[in-house]
Each structure stands twice: as C-alpha cells, then as structure tokens.
Image (cartoon, rainbow over all chains, first blue to last red):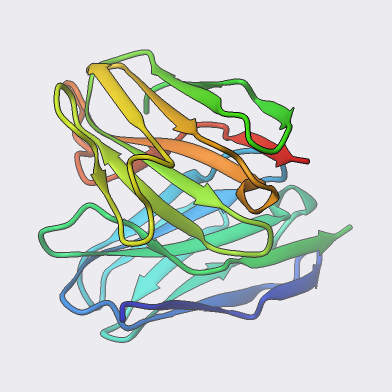
Length: 110
Length: 118
C-alpha cells in the first residue's frame, strides 16, 4: 500500500533556529513529490514539486530536497509567520492522485 | 495559480440530510478533484470529477453517498448524502491543468468546506 509518512508530527522552534522536516514514502513508481503549507481554516497552499532524486527547489526560507526514499523541507532562520502545518504528498506514474502524509505542525516562537 | 472558491465555507447539518458543496474556478482547468480531511488525518481523495461523464471514485467512496457533477471546465459540485456524524470533516476541491499554464502536474486547492453533522 502506498504510504507517505511525515516526521516529526509537531515541531517548535525559536525564531532564527533552522531545522528540517522529513517525508518518507513508499509510493511505488513515484512520479512527483509535493510539498504544501496549510494554515488553520484554509486549504493547502502549493509550495514545491520534486521529480527526481537529487533535485532541490527553494523559496524564501524554504528548501525542498529529494532522495530515492525521502524528502526534506529545510527551514532556514524561520520567522513566526512560517508557523503552519506542512504537508507532503506523492503521486504515482499514470495517476494524478495525491497520497498525503499527516503533516508536520510547525510553530515558530518569536 | 487560479482563484478557487468553495461554497459554503462551513455548515452544521442534521443527521440524515444532504449538503451540496460548490467549487468554482476563475479559469478553465483540465482536472478537478474532491478530497476529505478528517480531524487529525491526512487528506484523502474521494473522486476525480470528470466533465460530461461520471466521476471516478476511489476505493471506499461510492456515488450514492458522494454524487459529483462537473458540467463544465470551471465548476463542480460534491453532495454528501444521508449524512451521519462520521461525515463531519473538511471537504476540499482541487484543480490541475490550468488553461495556458505551465504547471500542469501541480494541484491547487480551494479553501475548503467545514462540515459538522449533529
């Protein structure tokens, strides 16, 4: 069964304290690995898509990387406005279905 | 990305009733999907809304419970039928393949509809 597992479930950081979120997947024939940000009461906001091992993408303080078995979302010098739940999802070849992890709830304290 | 709206944004319903949720996009899209996000759980795909034909349902979801329409390239509805408290959840539509866009494989989500069934 295809699975996406995110860790940790929750993470508290001080402003400026860099860290990484993990997403491991067992999606056979992974075609794309997606990262989303979700704020309370809102729909997921698209951040990145990664397609092949070794690929990296950056946006402001966020950088997503992909290996053959997992993806990392690195957060450099986070600010309180980065507080949100970060979701990871994978798709298989031939399907547009996103298989989501449960997310990591990030809290950045000032 | 497109602007995606959902109506209603939230509702409280009685057991045994039905609710229809609307999803409207401000530009034509190739694909539209409906997801469910139960408290503390992952987002789960309910079905793919196909224009002009029956929706494609995922395992565990059936048309009688979740009828879906997609009359054109910018609009879809999801009905939650004969509701029970277990249907309390956030329902989200997503779209893919924006007309004229370059990000075909990326899915963009609406704001969600928070449903509570008493």
